[in-house]
Image 1 (tube, protein in one colour):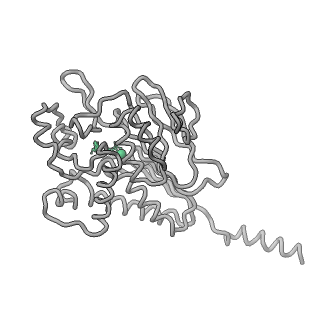
Image 2 (spheres, protein in one colour):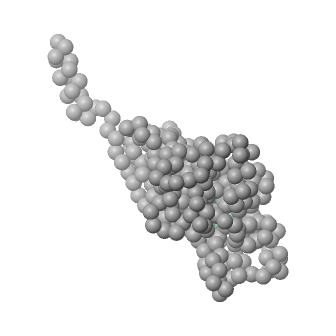
Image 3 (cartoon, protein in one colour):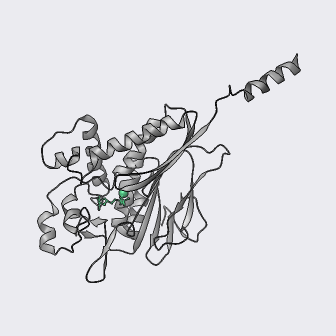
Length: 311
Ligand code: ADP
Ligand code: MG
């Protein structure tokens, strides 16, 4: 009898009654960047389709530069936000206050003045900067990919997805655990090209978001490099010792806003901000190639200095 039961169970497994896991993956272009999505689970293809639809909806709603988007209409004063849209705008304002204004979701006119939207670049003078600085048109470019990652995690939760990992243009989001129990390993891109700076290990659902001065920039007539992360105080690209900031946080939108804000703050103010605020970890990479990691980061394959809470 026992032998019969064992054979029966073995047959059950072989005949496919046990749920089969499939993998679905795709690279798409969305929100002005390349996105790579990988999902494992019983119905990974359906989940992938839903993820793509969500990303396209978010892009159509929140693109600052597509004249047909909700955000463009809001900036023209033509529409009012619904409750969900208002909640995101409120959150952006709250993150701006939290970072002392280093993250500023209303820099669209400045971005356009510098030519980052049209790619017809221009180095403005102080008078031009001053003129548009406070006109308050929304641009959620520093937050929206992190928010999208967060919404994807919420979408995956009720589905039969065992794990997923995606890179939404520099915003890595993990979901679930690898079946062998090992951590996800996320490479930190080398701002100067070549091998990654190092690898961070994370478990479960975590956002690992990088902002850098090497992602979008132009070289001015003066030979200087002008990149797309603006210091809201000067209206010009943040000019400090950093070349990238990576933030690790369970909350995707917060990770995204923080990576931009800490880049603006620079190494000293950024590490002081981390010491005063719990709930996230940071890897700073300087223009001269030094790496500083806060004490909660599990960083390997690189030499780095640890920043501790007590410093
Ligand atoms: P990326 O979008 O390349 O991943 P970020 O998350 O740092 O990088 O976002 C940069 C984008 O955010 C810019 O392209 C611009 O639209 C907007 N932005 C620039 N400077 C700031 C700032 N200080 N605060 C908020 N948004 C900003
Ligand atoms: Mg950001």
